Length: 202
Length: 202
Image (cartoon, rainbow over all chains, first blue to last red; front, side, top):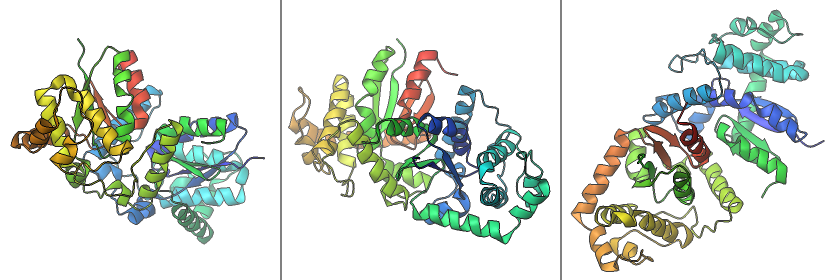
């Protein structure tokens, strides 16, 4: 079986959310699965890069707000979240995700979708383990175990290692899809991933 | 007649070069012309944004080098220029361009293509008015007038005003195509410009 597509993203990245809605269909067309790998853009990656958050970057921040809403309109997506609102602390959802991935690997995609939906469509706060546990969880997960998992040292270590591995692999943006070692950055590059998978690269 | 597409770019931007190769065909499909508007990313725009050059940005610089070469391979483009080589001072080609646009407006597209080709395919140095005048110029332009124009106060003022206007309009990346007031950033967004022109926006 061919290797899964490594899907790197940040839950608080709107472009990561957009890509999350179609990445599995893209992978399935080529007989691939998706390995979901959340990371922490603002807390970790941007510091390595020496950049400030996109929305706080002059000119680019305004464009990004416009582009995100334009993409949502084009694809009929309802973004409940105000882009100017603080995203809150991104550690809890990412830790909860890695805990679920570790202990219920078959639920990783459902957990990622549940977190994205809670954050971007429902505009829920996900800043604490309790807030994460209160979202509509995939069947088979209890709020108690998610709250416990998100607050665990194990989850903190899993996330820390995942972020370090992503940075070590050169990942700097959300989403980035790595196909057999070849990275593609940007929600607008999924068609290129599709082409790469179709022809085996160039 | 519908307004031209405003095509903002930097001559030293590889993505600007890529887009320059197809923007006229895109515009023509919709009965539009192209208004060529070079700007100065490194010298002016990035300072407003508080960013360092892309190629000097950790992680992103490495990705960009890879992505540019991948795009060139995919489209059969020969990039003579080493991406790691200094681009040199970008003032002379941009000033020469605006001088030609002012005095021979019907030659603006040919002049833009000539400069892009000299820089990206032939890897010529364009750091001085004389170097710019020594490229293969469009028929109807003499090397002497281009050298004179590129060194003129008039060209310096035209460029300064164009860069200020671009920044004032929120332009921060190369290429950015503005269609009837709607900006699209990135060589990978030309298909979105195409769609916007086809349906009149959304």
